[in-house]
Image 1 (tube, rainbow, N blue to C red):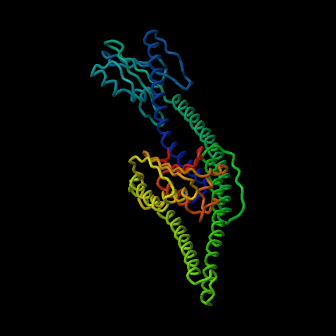
Image 2 (image 1 turned 120 degrees about the horizontal axis):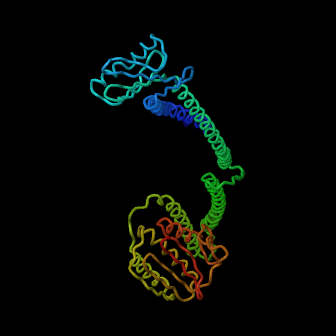
Image 3 (image 1 turned 180 degrees about the horizontal axis):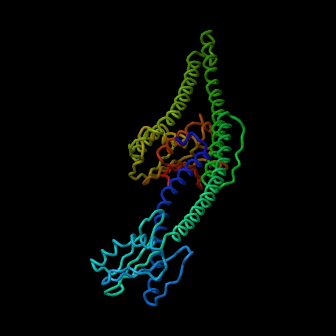
Length: 435
């Protein structure tokens, strides 16, 4: 429900609920604890005053003060209640009423001490009864005017402290939330500009999660721009690559229809058409396969591929196709995560690429989660090695510029990495598990 409000309003609502809840819970607890503390203090006052009265017959006159204390002596043998202070008969009867029941119970049960308080009219009366000797009980009594004043003063101070603390905390939280809202608005505007394909910049100098988020958005924007450039370049290259063979096929087909044979005879001219048709078919298949890898990347199962068996099969075919190339293998048993079909196309693309550049020798090394395919051809350009695996990055002997991008997508899809490394006498393509 709160999510429909702004962060500042959410903060005010939540903080208000917490403040009310804390006050509703803590104030009764504080009041109860203060009452307990004051009760103990009042009984201590009675005890000290009672000891002075009993030991030294000292009973100072507190008349007019906030804590007037009265002392009584009850004699069991004579059944009389006397006081050292001068109080009226009416007040004496009221005071006698406060404790007389407890006094008679103590005498009957022979108890030595009793501390109690009782409500009388609009005040609380604290009293303490102590057995002085076999014949006498000392009763000390004080009204609650002093305790009420002390409790109210303490309670007011505690409440004031709470209000000040809540005000400071609330102000600090409000400032903190406000500091979050500004960069969040900048991020929102930045995302809107990306959505509307507008040029925009985001400058947020923070090292917290918002700073990390803004940095990630900037990186995302840069990646989107890079992907858009690649997409535009791909569209341009695809259009050019498709246009050329299609135009040639149309031209040659029309010429043959008009009984004109550009290559001298019908068979040679038709062979040119078939060659470009085959090239066109391979181009379309590569494009479809590249898009298919994007689709299946989120549907990877638990399949594994026996890489040794797969490479042995590919090498057998390659030897038949290129008998002039010496192929050396050093293969250990190793299973790679993924389906055989996808790994077969991946490895074939690397080996076909090696076969185009090789002078005499291709060497294949397979170990646990490690595959290296070496050829003794020319070194690659190290200025931008990552571009080698981008779509339509064509070398001087390349064909479509899609083979190594298919390799890269297949390898990363299954949690591996691929890199091209220049050796002293050639180039190695290395596939291994990511760290």
